[in-house]
Image (cartoon, rainbow, N blue to C red; front, side):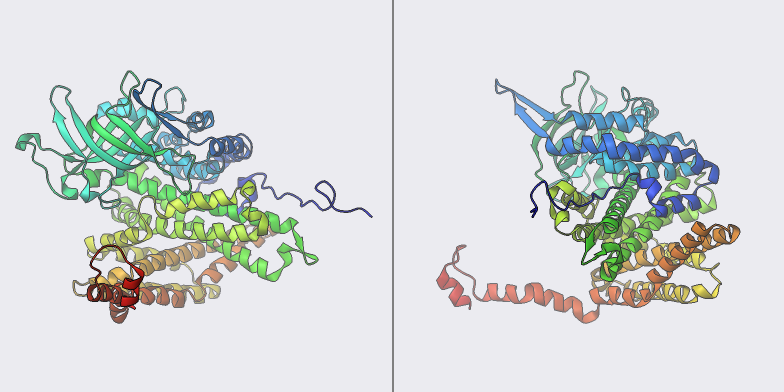
Length: 622
């Protein structure tokens, strides 16, 4: 009898996705609908090759980056402060590759006009699986380039912008983004960092403490600081209205840090290959970007781009989770049958696939708008009256919604692999930890949900009306009987969203509206994603009609129809609960009582004489 051993017995066939672009019909179909056929034909070989790179050299670089994480050497052997940030050669190699592949440059070369952003983001989506976490500095580099393009001086464009968008590794530089401070993360109005004009340098001198600086090894950085008015004895303004935007070289011409001391590296839950630090600024020499006291407005292009990056990063993570889980289901046999034939497992994977499809549609819709805004005349009615205000509304919605679902899907993907999913070697644990950052970076779920309300309030409800008009525009052509139920469900969703906002958009009921902001934000995401899925399915059906003899196209059209209908089925009931569950007249006060009322009352009634709590004190409270 032969017994199983470490070398003898069953060995699971390893699930491997060979080429993400070639194996993912969802992404290909979305690009086929959004891009002219000639553009897709031209860029497809590049998308295929970046997947091949990601699975080979990219995967090896990522492993080395994770094994050799950033370190800070603050002092040399003679106790001199050096603040040397040590990163692996693999991290440095990623910078060269990002330049060579044009991961930023594609968007600004604009070879394909408004479609260049779609091309760039599609490549970015496939590149991220081999880039480790280098997508973070790339996101901020992209955002910095756009801010300089819109608000920078000619000198900034000549000396910095051209390098941020270069394909030459010897020329290419990256940008950091230093916003977060100790008094407030997203509440930048509490910024303590100050900028003082230095007439001898003809530059601003910035001092303060930045609590969280991603991509600490960047070449330049954009940051907010409270401006001393040189024409008014250095007076400063309070709140966000006192902030201006600045651009600084991280190092001077001698390679020394430019008024920067690296206090310490952050010990994060995930994204460990990415150097993130606390920085003390003391006389950082910088130039102002745009007008004084317009810092928050001037930095908004970065926020649009980095939030779209979050959406695309989450879409990319979902893509890998779904393709990996499906590949494993094709190979893993349990209880005498492959997982792909097990009804419950099949239903679980189908839910993952459905969310990935919806997220892909929403993300690329936002990317297409971004491309039009950057490439077309901003005075065109479509851009000025639709794309610009709609993208401002949708980017926080996309970021919140995609981040929450990507993290949830990481857990489902881990389960789909069973015990093997829990092993670090599979990479799923790292993927779960890394994708979690998207729920926090650039604003938490609550912060961005309130931002959605802010946009709607600041526009007097016009942003919401534009949203409703856009969704109805997607639904208008859907006249065939198979769309009746989906269109009805989506229309009811719009009515629920509009009536809830209008009912509580008053000073007296503001707290109730804020309490339901999450539900409202997710409702808007679910609704527009459903409408986009319906639009895509209708396009797919038309393509199948033209290619009646092609069985593959017919199957694809049927799957698109099933996906859209299933997404919309019962969506109005789901949304009604999402909105009402988080905010109603009684619930807000009940939440306060449940969380703090009783505890505060007990504390006031039985306050101890000292800060220490003895067993006797606990008994007295009981």
